[in-house]
Length: 436
Image (cartoon, rainbow, N blue to C red; front, top):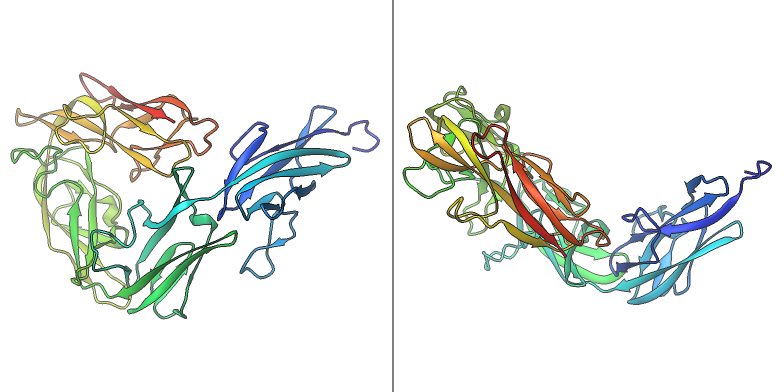
């Protein structure tokens, strides 16, 4: 800028999730935070100068700030980038950014998380408390199990997986691999001890891990076998044409422990592909009813590393034509749709928790009867306040609602709408979410 008459005018600091200047932020022990510094110039332009300012902390024993010079624990030759915050103890510190005679100070408050626990990717406790005599994580050879570290920060569940260091206490190349919470089974063996630790606190979690060959697999449809409608009525129809059904496949070990979801590792064989499309034979994605007919015999096939091919018991599915008459949005689960629908719920800003919303369709069937069926993946989900609520965007996450990560904005109410333009009577339905 020298010689142009344009120079730095002032500095702004803000955390990653805030697009505007704020006075302070709160981080937590065991986490790694980040601040950014922007320089504004006399001609109105600005730039990200996070790596060019000089950072300092008034209380480095409470929270350090990196200038690209603090080594990453356990990673040789790697330093934390500029502006990274490393909390060490509860309290407050003032972080200063300086550049060419300009400086700005920013307050950082450090809190202490509690109630650390390991979960699977869907936030179910690991090991599974439903199996008290089987307190370990067990994966099949050639399969993977993802783990998350969850802790309560100011009473709100938060995902600390990315801030953790994951390692086995034992050498285990022939048994299992562990990287950022993902355990991959290589060959039968164990137990190994998986250890989770943090660079910025003394908290440590451990869990035994075993790897075993998989003796059997079984298909567990999303809805009850032979009754793919939402209701429990024995007269309920099979899958309505145009609707979808998850055909989940589980490994069964026969040792008293929980089953393992291996849906993404299997393929399917069916007696007649004309009626049902199962995602080109690949598991993990919903089956879609194409035309009315059946029943169709469906079998899951798996080839796990180091094992001979395994086939599941066969299930029978039928399909039927139906005309969608109305859509109802609910909070899942729904026991007696649409009368049992809950049309409002609440989410906590910044929480890792999600709400599973469900769309229920009322159909006039080709046999003259009326039925209801889950159409969560069939409808289009929208929200009027996307700054408050994030909606799942894939077929596997359809209807999942989570609050905005930045609690600065996550206060208020949002309305989520389920829409299906093929409905003849009511094309939309809404559910209200309070964000607090």
